Image (cartoon, rainbow, N blue to C red; front, side, top):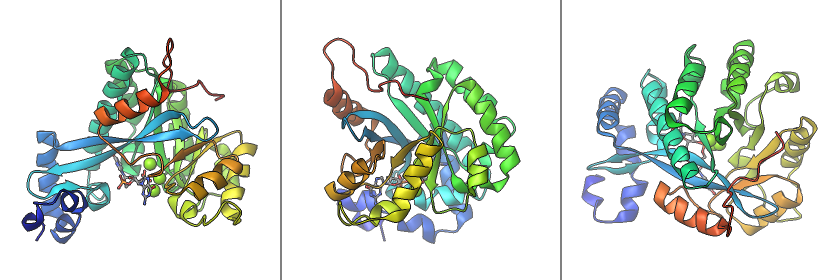
Length: 291
Ligand code: C2E
Ligand code: MG
Ligand code: MG
Ligand code: MG
């Protein structure tokens, strides 16, 4: 069905259906092939400092560039990969590629703090901290420019183990964000034990902001919670000026969403982000932060 529509670019990028309709085992086989072929592309979405409106970082999001089906978005294949061990080489590939990219940006004089999504299965591998260390060492990337995003569910799956792993990662010097925060069920008690730097407000809450005055109590609560724990807070899925105004006025530190830019290939990202923040002498994408 989708192959027939390949003439239109828009259809290509939105073409999420076929893999879902295919049996998961077949998708897995196709994905393994894609991984070997390097058909996984990494896109970068800007994170913008709410007060200064400067680009301070990026989130790496992968896309599967299928030769016939077009670009397949992560929600159509990551869950399938996560139900098998296939997510391990995928996350490893993305992690290594992001470290290489970050290191290349660093050599050009730009400190881009980049986040990588890490699935539960990868996060819980005993060798995961070693993998991170290796990817950093091989690329020469400054650890503080790498951020790992784990979801609230991943963190809560086995709290004791998560704290242990997070502590190791923190020692390596990477940053850690809790993704999709607010939709899970962290108790405050656990949250306080997680040695993380950032909370990312789930998109569903951002979507609930209708106007700059309309109170969205959960967002306010998450932001004050973050502040009281000395964490920085990012809102994802920001699409409108109203949402941006509300979040900035609520003291949300960083903003991510289509309002400032969709995920794009690294060349496009660097063009727009570097130009947006170009400084005559010292190009800095990341004003070094408090944590
Ligand atoms: P996430 O980490 O919560 O990423 C945010 C998602 O929201 C991305 O979807 C992004 O494109 C989308 N988004 C950003 N701004 C807006 C906006 O303003 N409006 C709307 N409606 N959406 C926005 P994407 O790229 O489809 O990724 C979906 C999920 O797939 C990610 O959610 C993440 O959990 C997972 N994922 C993506 N790449 C990877 C990866 O390399 N490894 C792993 N393990 N998971 C990944
Ligand atoms: Mg994320
Ligand atoms: Mg998220
Ligand atoms: Mg999300």
